[in-house]
Image (tube, rainbow, N blue to C red; front, side, top):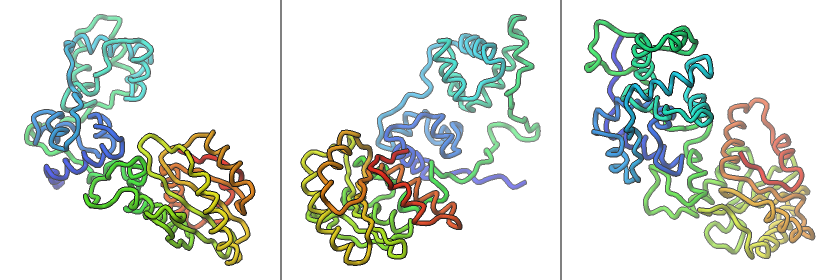
Length: 347
């Protein structure tokens, strides 16, 4: 079988930046591996320690492997968790059990360069000489020990890995993969450094509704004098007035309710002239408050708007992804049902 080509330094660095953008912070070693398939051993081929990768990416180092405990102390704490669960824990099970039992095993799967596989191999060897009460662990489910290839030296082997895809959604168009990152005011990886974030978010939000199947007309993107976009579903006879808001700490209504009322009346009449008799006011942002929804609902009660929908960027990404994944059964009328009633739609 042909060996997989080792990933380049640049690939790993860009994947790390992409993960940081998804999380909004420096990713842990375990999260980085789960999202990209890039193992700790690959990182250490180019960087002496994980914090060096974070520093080169321009991020605050996250000291993944700092641990003053001895291997035996960590193995003993891990053994208590195994006995408690009567199995070898997965990463989520380990985190939960660690909080409950407060053992010294929080760093178990991040302790060695080979991650979970290397830890379990070493733990298995440690158990051979452990006290009798720990011996039943050897027969527990969940070991999944890595297979050893006697014909290949570990130092020369290149891990078989899939191409990196840092948390990307397979059915979501590339332009929308980092919509939630733009929503909180951060610049996604691979984005032009001179691109204005708020304008980019408004354009990508319009693209999202276009992907859903609406006829989208950009309006006042970046001007503040009009809504950002109008989305029409002529055959289904309903329309959307869309405004996209970038906020680093979540959206707060403030005094924009007056401007929204102007949007609702002005654009509402325009959409009604097109024969669209069911109108919805859509605000897309990073997060929303119920108190703002209530206030906006009251202030727009005399407008032609049927319902007000506050949609988080993450929820809009999910809508687009599901519409493409299930394109054969997806319809805009089914989507409209999600807009019945004034509400916040979030992940």
